[in-house]
Image: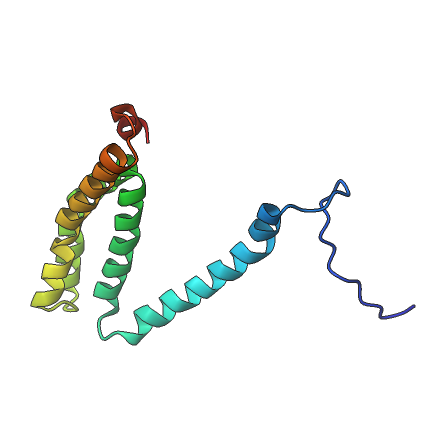
Length: 137
């Protein structure tokens, strides 16, 4: 039988059926990742200043991580506190930033600190986790 098309095999390599989680990881996660990458690319290229748009998208990802895992948020805070001024200076030197873009860039670190506090508050008060959770992630 030439040119026969095989159906998609939803079995693992050992012959057992895949679980819903395995199917999601193998098939759905790459598709969602591709769609997310297309959306981010469209969002960055559609705005007037792609530099500031990239800073905003990076900040949103860091805020989400900081709320979910405050320990990782502290590491992001250390990184952004050290390098946001450099990003601002490079943007100004490239003549790509206006005054509002500078304000947006410099507001990332304080807002990240607020996200860390929200994540810590949620962990301590709402989820009733111990202090060790905050220290170890």
